[in-house]
Image 1: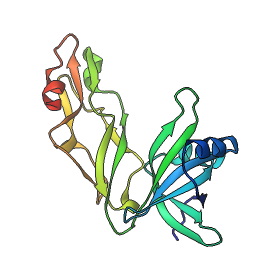
Image 2 (image 1 turned 45 degrees about the vertical axis):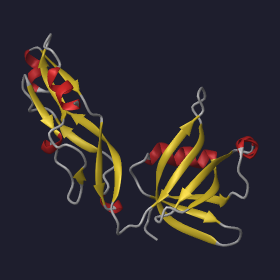
Image 3 (image 1 turned 120 degrees about the vertical axis):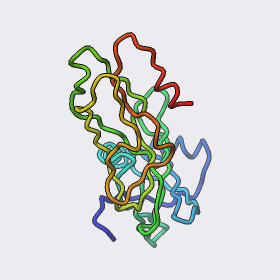
Image 4 (image 1 turned 180 degrees about the horizontal axis):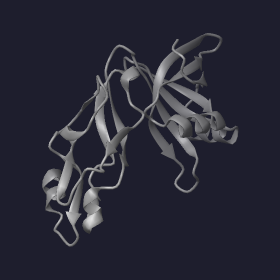
Length: 199
């Protein structure tokens, strides 16, 4: 198996709110693992180990999920999928984990990281951001943890669209390529471009 970080899990025999509460008291998080075929398996994972790994790699980096099925262990490359937190506490109360086929494409939302200072802001412009992440499709091993976007060349009343972004080889964006990601507008200008792009 590829050299990814590993998260250990155990098969969960019972489900329900009462079972989930007892697991959390014991320092475990109820979870569901979906394999590459979409088949589901209730599992439980150590809360501390889960939190540590999730904070380190987020939803855009691969890891191995090692599931103890009662003496037999299965290892799958996987991604964190849906994460539910307690309403008040900053603790994970449930998580879905998605097993991937390394040879088949996946579609994942990847954060955009804007770098540099736009030229237009030096003459009074303001930066308006319309997208903080991008839905991309690629094979799992090509999945970027983030997409860097250099905005330093943006002048006043200029924009970057999805089609302008430099994506890694093998990665392509989903959706309308003409959608505006970020603009530099004159202060006081109506934000019509972003509204039109949303429409």
